[in-house]
Amino acid sequence: MMGAQMAGGLDGARVAVTGASGFCGGHVARAAAAAGARVVCLGRRPGPVGEFQYWDARRTRPDLTETDLVLHLAAAVGDPPPGRAAEEAFRAVNVDGTARLLDAAGSRTVVWVSSASVYEAGGSAPISEDHPLGGMTAYGRTKAAGERLALDAGAVVLRPRAVYGPGDPHLLPRLRRAIRGGRVLLPGPDIPLSLTAVENLADACLSARNWSPGAYNVADEPTYRRDAIVGLVCGVPVQHVPITFARAVAAASGLITRLTGTEPTLSRYALEQLTVPVILNTARARDQGWTPSRSFTDYASTLTVAAAEP
Image (cartoon, rainbow, N blue to C red):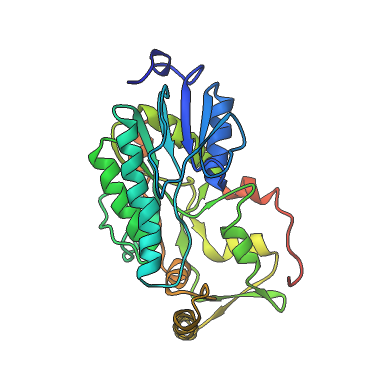
């Protein structure tokens, strides 16, 4: 049961953060500590602050003794080669690990961080939380399945998209690796999209303890243009290639992946991310009183621009 100190704020509350050794979880753990919480970082590696408790989401039940609030960010992530082995590995963490966490949490408030990757692709209108779920990859499918468990248990589920910010090991480094010959080749045309600053996600995680159970989209206030973002990150011009060419590259990359078991150079999922507009409607979170305070403009001012080919 939630402690009395949780009614007004986090001062003195004992807050469990899973996945705190990762990019998003680390930011959330630091934000909780800054808000006065006594943070317990659960995972296979220590987090950046507070107490560390080892937890392997694939195998064991976490120890949530005397915790008041659970912020669950541990997840299997990535774009692995298709196949049963990848699906089972992702399910062990994102579904089975969720079941273990929810069982341990009991009546405690749980904020479960999901992803916009759970949504089915398609449509140009802003996506609200009742949009059909699907997921093109093992990650998206197993996050959607884990979500169902969390929602059935009365958790608050957050759905950010393409989280970025200081220390980002995924999105921005991957874009910079795409620089070739002083330019970045992208399948045309340009598209609008939503992004989520990691600071906005962390703020939503702390605020969501007071929200009604259910699913909430979490994204920056502006709708961005893909080419403008990539140009800012890479510091070189963006040049479009025909989408038919990009699809051929993705198909060849998928064949090589199936033969070698290596990560694809350009997967079908990555192509979808680059060519399908995904704009999140965040009205439901705003109705709970949440307002995103950061945007990509804030982050861009801190970037060291890659001016040359890696």
